[in-house]
Length: 201
Ligand SMILES: Cc1cc2nc3c(=O)[nH]c(=O)nc-3n(C[C@H](O)[C@H](O)[C@H](O)COP(=O)(O)O)c2cc1C
Image 1: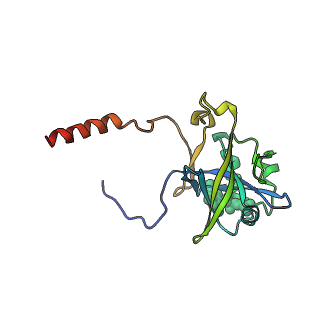
Image 2: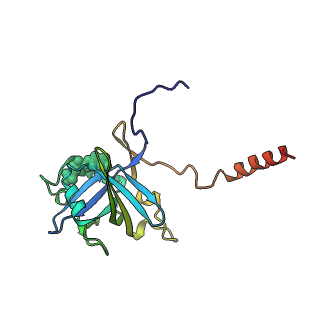
Image 3: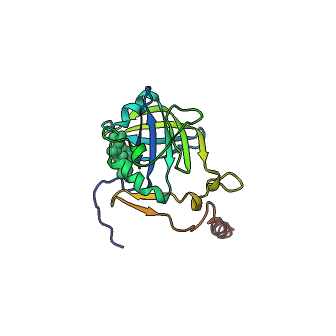
């Protein structure tokens, strides 16, 4: 396989595409689509979102210090795109997407009722990078529709049907099928370790 240097790109792919809802102190709210986002710590449970300071939602995120990550299903991919190509300066995305504001337990920002999973997040640090500022936030509650949970209260991917965003080609892709699970390579690893130990005898 011949490799070609295609330049310096943050080519991690796929990445998520989710909707972040936020509000200001007066109760005005907005939704921004985010793909620069993810997990940064398990304990405390911390996530990040990276946001340009030109976004209408940016001062809200700064002012109130909290936000909600709303995980959309495949059938909400259009709305997710819509919230990423229109600004709250011009339109009410809640209205146009037929979304309902739902009050969380801890944060001022509203949750999107129609999304199957919502994470209430409290911002702990904001770091200015370059084009974007990183909001590092603690997840203080996760709400999941009962229909997407298994009997151990784990969120099932085949029920939520989230989708991925491919940054370089700017495309949304569905996640089709299960191909493995955490630790499934262990029997092979054990065999390799055994071979190594017998070699040393
Ligand atoms: C799939 C997708 C992912 C996006 N990811 C980000 C992101 O991570 N950070 C960001 O600042 N803007 C991102 N955007 C752009 C904003 O969502 C977009 O500028 C939006 O109109 C901002 O809304 P607002 O002005 O109401 O805040 C993304 C857009 C799309 C379509």
